[in-house]
Image 1 (tube, rainbow, N blue to C red):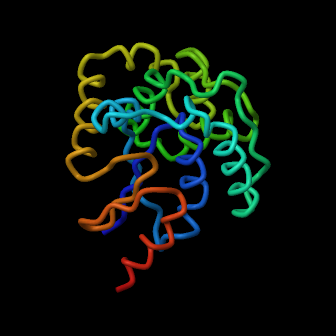
Image 2 (image 1 turned 90 degrees about the horizontal axis):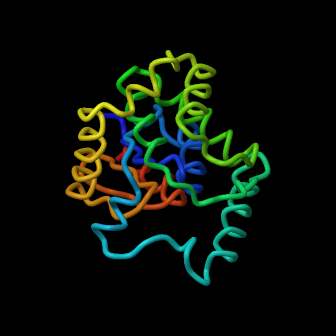
Length: 190
């Protein structure tokens, strides 16, 4: 059974996990979009990006990218973004069968090119570039059913034990953090 990687497209740590998951796991993990802001509300505290640890944690992300052999990490000017539309778009991309390609395009746009997370029109352009019918994205992310799907996925992730992003589920265990991919992969070979 393939692992599940819980992601939020605005998370730099989710980018780090996504960028190397295929090399760490014997098969690519299934991706599950969840709203990190919803996780923050459920756990009762938010992001380090709003604390005194911001600069040191940003430097840590950049160092991890170098250690992992990824392209130089570039921070978008307005990071962290309001990622609600992006996560609705990710849910739509998952339903369309193209979430890995879409996630790669959005992560690259932000954390390799250093661009801000785009509004719906820009997300549609990234979807098109990823091989999806981007012309349908703007309308799709306003669909109440899609909105409910993202809310339900976030609640389900919380119930499964996800307390931050990225998290990887392997069978009934949750591994939190991009630096836990190898530990998660080892449980698959036992």
